[in-house]
Image 1 (cartoon, helix red, strand yellow):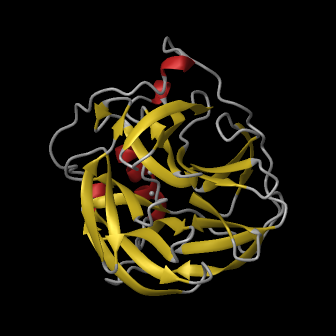
Image 2 (spheres, rainbow, N blue to C red; image 1 turned 135 degrees about the horizontal axis):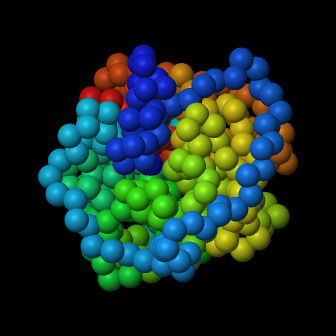
Length: 314
């Protein structure tokens, strides 16, 4: 799930507590090598089995989110880009919405997923020009608008839309990154548990990309740091090093084939890597929203659509 002006650290904590919408991070003065803390996979705790962490459950939350740092006070922005670094025509397309992520579906539609700050849960809409037409909440395993499901990251696998998301955000002892898949971008079926977050502390906001060698890379937000995880099959991921560049990451493939990492750190900042281990800073991509708000975070580079999606403040 995760753009502000001052009190950046306080706002980050508040956002994570509300809907796991982490918002910002410390920015390294130079582009250092990754800080390798190698926490390893989460350690299962409590009475909930790992196999049930991704079970879809009805949403019991009602009414607008009242936290002034939460999703009801965020807005979704869509901008155009040809290189993933320079944005034009940034436009607010949805209010009371946060943690957006976009994907170009097989039928040509650009689907934007977001946390609905008024009705909770993950919603999806179709972006067209400078507008977003909401479809409604997603369904997972027959459960419409499942509860405790936030921080969507959508990407194409063949003709299907795959969704990585944070499950169980209301209960720290049951948090996990899960993966589901859909033919239409609205109705999903669970593929499995990607990362068991129990024992890893507050970890949110997954972003997944397939690398040129066929393996998979996931970036996760660990407060104002980024945790890297890797997978052979794109389903089960093993966590590894942490990067100190910022949090609330997005990973994407740059036009030249390099891997690009966007993080929130006094704006949205881009880094690049040819091996996913050594990173160099490129530039700041977003400094403020189209309304002038300094709250900008939750980047999403929409592959194949020439669009960049992020959130801003009211």
